[in-house]
Length: 408
Image 1 (cartoon, helix red, strand yellow):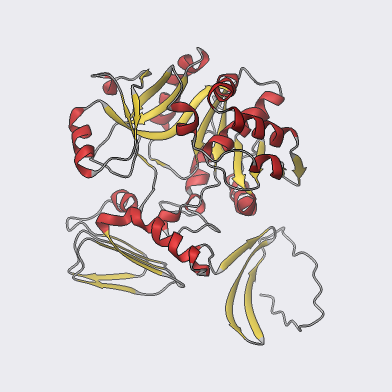
Image 2: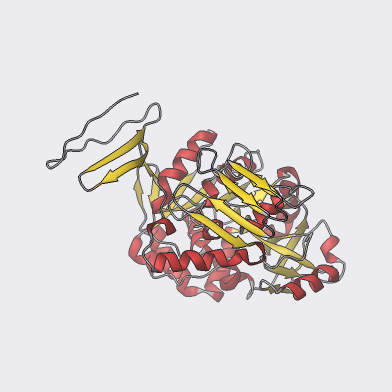
């Protein structure tokens, strides 16, 4: 049985202003009724998989638990990182959790929670195709057959003809996100696959790879897991030990250095939803290249993405070309479609300038539900507070303000 490890601690800043650190894209229903995180949980709801092990960030714990509860899925555990240290410490911590509980020989599948997979059956078949290689001690990744010259993804180079295989094939090298000309050449070459960032291996195989290639990360994460403390429905990794782990991705720390790395090529309707350009592709633009969602009116626009909230500001686009406009109640993004990867840089600028909209949304989530500030002045504040059925507010006392409650 395979142990899914679901990573849901990312910030998703390239989808700002919809996705922010306080409410990142994995929790937002971009397509359909479920969020990418919930779709990921359901993807592993077959007999081939054990209950999932979720790795999240402390600040996102209530969002994660609320969405887990909505699916009816009971995870094995929810590990909380005290701070983000990238995917290498996150995945390793999950492996150490399993090892400590006597499952060092078990298979684990590490998957981001913010990806779109339109055909989960094909994906599960690819996972099954990689099991034998993982059981033999190889590190298995999954490569998506490219459909366009994409500059926003990393690539995997395989041997000639291997990319059309349906079983694991050797990875010759990992390729960083290319420029447009290089991406076009790799698409025409036929040996290159998009790196999906999904991994399958034995628990002890991964730990041994860290012993060889990243012993500092291993030592820090082992201490953090061994000293982890339960807290309600969570297991908190020990903060001081975890902070000592060098920040690194699994690709950089292990996969690019290790031998016996293989990939399973597949086509499953995959996207990492890593930019508004990716969202535009997945929205199936019309004959004029237009993708619209929410309260939008457009006249004479071409090759653009216009998105507003259903209950947000009315967005009107007139004769726009190659433009993305994302309107929220508290922030608006206007960007050239050819440079949407730079949204992350814009968010970094906002954060450095202390702009609260860089990371926060008007709606704040708590264990009992959420609240939103409707109006605020020097001597008053009006909040909308929503408490779902079965929840209860925490008891608070305030000595220097009066409160008036209206319960609907």
